[in-house]
Image 1 (cartoon, rainbow, N blue to C red):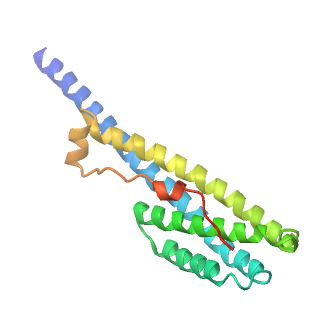
Image 2 (spheres, rainbow, N blue to C red):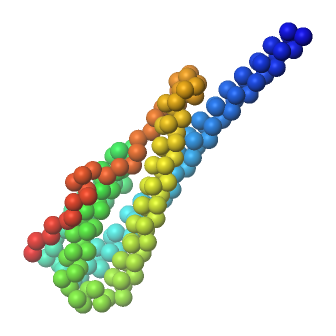
Image 3 (spheres, rainbow, N blue to C red):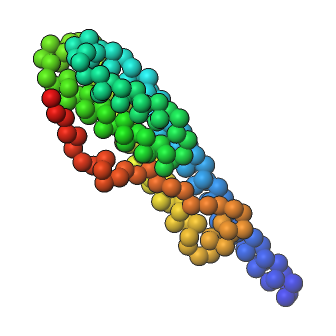
Length: 182
């Protein structure tokens, strides 16, 4: 009888450990999937930007610095590989795009251009998708990081090498409005 009770307790403990391990794996996979979703949206954004810049260039050729910044920040964003690096580069690119749209505001004929309006609409949709993807990624990272830190899963997480992930964050400077001077 004692052997059966011991066996039942052992089976329950093993089942709980398997459940904890599987929940950690599921969260890690969801983090990877969420990061992939962000990457897809950022790629779409990077593909739209050259078309938008070329459209604006025809109307505002003297805004060379704005165009150079967009090209530079786009390149940096495409080369970044970590969530932290991507966040910094993408936030710089967002600021440069705000400057581009501020420049566009001074050209009524550009704002009336059908091509510009379509590109601006596509970019706006993409920006919304990026924000949604970032929020989902950060929620999954929060869940994973919490699971890794709470007892008793923290013991299992340490044994199997689960590590906390970084949030996709913005900095205080990125929250400031863009100042455009003509």
